[in-house]
Length: 149
Image (cartoon, rainbow, N blue to C red; front, top):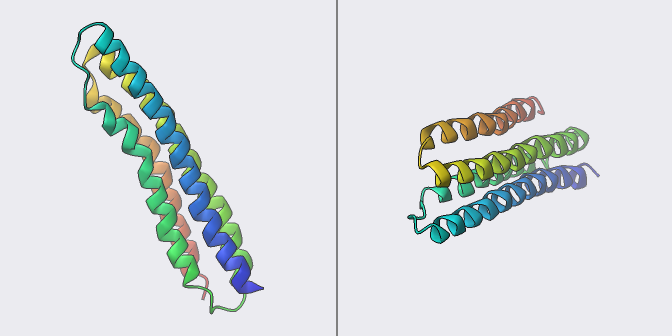
């Protein structure tokens, strides 16, 4: 039963992280396409930089994958099932929600960058702050996983 819960936690961690990345990149990509359309309609150059905002939420899938592999490494540890399941669900949620909101911020950045052609560094800094939530979640989960002997 422990192995089942460990695998379920690992899958939940990756799945929830990836779902957040899918939502986030989807929101940002939709905004980028709309911003490019406005640029084309106004005969302005369409900024390629918008892809930076679109791709930002993808990294959260990698964080979930890293945690998944480490959780799967606990399959031979007796009593690790419940902790890994709980960690997987809550870490995946934290990381995935970070990606979702990073995508929403990226969508706003796409609109602003295309309209003004200014502020790129500021927008990236804001996305980086949202990313930090996912990084903190991954690091703190790694520490918790290290406590499972």
